[in-house]
Length: 49
Image (tube, rainbow, N blue to C red; front, side, top):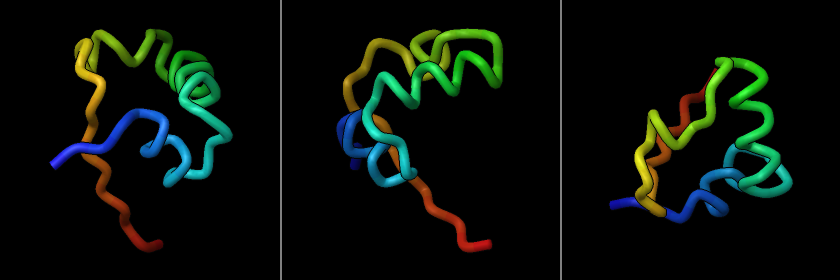
């Protein structure tokens, strides 16, 4: 079951999906869309540290 990219971004502590996308691109050097496809739903797995 997936959630919206915005919901996933909020769950991960980002202000919104644009913030997540900027950080992803800065970290990995590419937009998240080639990795996640054009789907509007993503799966989130949280791991405790």
